[in-house]
Image (cartoon, rainbow, N blue to C red; front, side, top):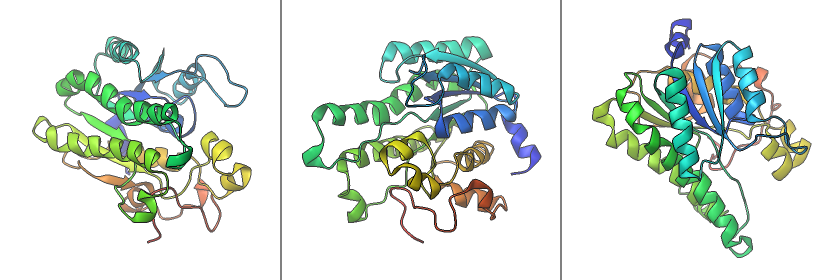
Length: 278
């Protein structure tokens, strides 16, 4: 990505679900560094001893990086919270140009071990939350001359070992991807680009540390900054680049970045879910 590409985000307004920490925060900070305005809808009003950061500290980090930001405490499952977040973003910054569907719930239990409550939680946050935030922001996207939807969701990999590994989580994440690819087709004539972005490897976030293997798993994971750099690159591309599911390393390679050592993960990083060896 060239410097002129990065300037595409100058003055653009992003609304993001989640973003208090991890990949979402890294993307928001990187976008702020390039001059974007960011509105965050997240539940983390107060510090949690198990997890770093709140929506308020995230705003501080975005502004320290050079962007403008506003926090909206709320739940992406709640229609009134989402409406309030969209209205706040539009009022603060004069409109909305970009929706980033980042919030996601993870549970890798198999069918026999997953309760209906946990099943519902994943579907409501992941696919329903993606639909709710995007559809609520749609009137503002239609008015933007630079409208983008970016969803952090995987390629639709129908290999049996992924279909059968954790079907409920798979359904919720593939739902996010299918919605986004559907919007690319639905809104092609409106000039609204819609794409997905997914990491090639696991990313060193609290979810990986707490749910997927602790510090050992984190050591074989790349840092969230790789997704941030890839997201900024995708959001800076022309509107005709739409309807695609991007893998972070492929995006960076297209921009001439092939030395991934600054992102960590060691010589043999762990592949993420739904990604097979090339």
